[in-house]
Length: 467
Image (cartoon, rainbow, N blue to C red; front, side, top):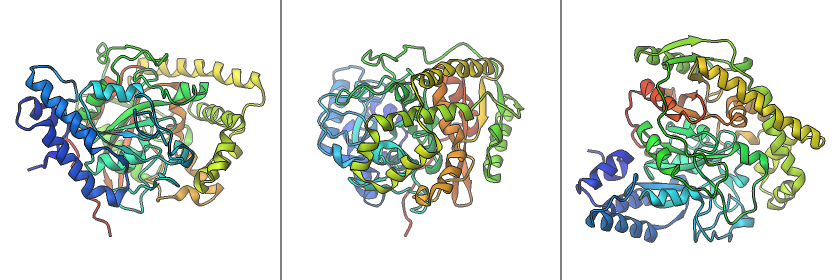
């Protein structure tokens, strides 16, 4: 029998509502799991047992009064350490922000609390939340429960490792260049990058973000079941108009044709045979579930959106970010920013910046037109199997190849469409999965396709038993 900490969010909500278990008992079990496995993983870097038990008691008290305590009543969750949570440090993996206490909650945190979730800890991120790996000078390195030699992903590496290991049923992550989708891929779980504006976000303790991150960065859930991804999405996207990009779109749209496009190697990206095998097997499962799947050689552009995405990132370097990176002096993130600056120069002038933002409209139009024919696109999460841990420290040439392997991670955020990582199993010792992309605000279509691929089964939590 699965222990309480290993229950899915859906199972937890049902058991608490039926009074089969109290929210306090669930929280105690989750905290015990955290204590048991986190020392090996270092996925959770700020714990809050007292606050977690208080939140659980509030759920139990609401149920005793006959009140509805929320979508995630009593569900243990984690929050990434780069978003504001009142009373805790928004470190973003930086020594410079070690004492940066948030005065109030980011909307996504406020929404989790409104939904009755029990926050048990805050998860690690690389310095500046900029890498597909997860280490920094303030919190140290996070490890993948599947093995220390595999990256836990980034920047939501702590969320991916924690969720895969059963530390919480749902992990909160952020994604500007794959930071939800890639940790889900390498940790063998599921992760959703929702549509821009679907989940309200804003850090009250920090300056307003530049226009590039505003257009490309979102929060999203990671979980061991797609039902929990859906539940997390619904809870995180409760209305909060502190975010000017927030759109109160319905979660279920009109029926769309069950028609998917399979593109194994978008724009000629190199794809490992094991990744291609996972894509073709996922397409076969869709067909078995009654979907029509058509293989296509080309998709709307991804390389140029990825280049413009990088340009908008690099524009920040000349407005204080590079000085902060140099001051932090964390070797890996400093090297990554230097590599990115070499590969993607910042805009030469205001006209080039305006041209980049103007071009975005055309790319969005092309993709939305494509989705009218194919409501789901099946494509790689990454062209390679999971990277070795800290592999981006092996020099410029290797970083350039990795960036090309991550084309879909970097290109899609510029367009603002939703994308879902679905784990599909193992390729030897490596987890593997596929990515689904679809029309804006139609996360429901992606989740339905993902459930057709997986059969809807939950993934057992992983014990980090490596030596």
